[in-house]
Structure formats: C-alpha cells, structure tokens
Length: 83
Image 1 (spheres, rainbow, N blue to C red):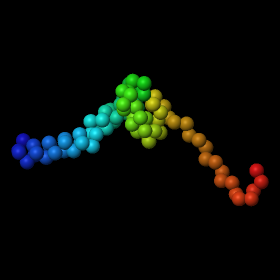
Image 2 (image 1 turned 180 degrees about the horizontal axis):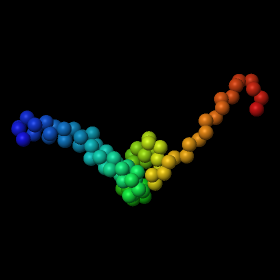
Image 3 (image 1 turned 180 degrees about the vertical axis):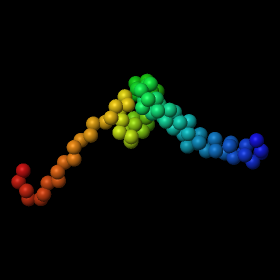
Image 4 (image 1 turned 120 degrees about the horizontal axis):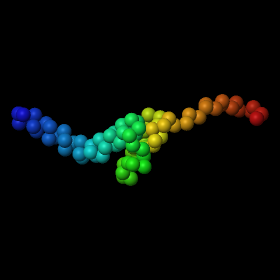
C-alpha cells in the first residue's frame, strides 16, 4: 500500500472511531442478526439496546424482528361537527 493510501485509510478509521463508528457498526450487526432471526433485543448489550431498537423501529420492526403494529388512520373531525 502506498503511503498516501495508508494515510487515507488511517484518517478514515480515526474519523469512524471519533463518530462512534465502532458502536454504530455493532448496532448494524445486531439489527441484521435480529432481522435474520438469530438474536433478539434481550441478547443485545444494554448500552446498544436503545440504538438497536431505534434502528429496528425505523424499518418497522420490534426488538424480536416482528412487524410493529400499524394503527389505522383516524378520520379528521370537522370543527363544529357533533360527535
């Protein structure tokens, strides 16, 4: 590897670590494991659970890889209408 490529790789690695790259990579790994049915949220380290649940919710899944319940849309009420 040339010295320029080596410096670039080191800078990218440092940037990822500074931005919490390792934790975010692990969040992605646990999301993939849950989606694949190999793990569930109780098997995720406590310090990653909130981020994993947020990532799963963003794709419509719960901590066990099951679809989140979808609430039916509510009809907007018109002002002055008797209920």
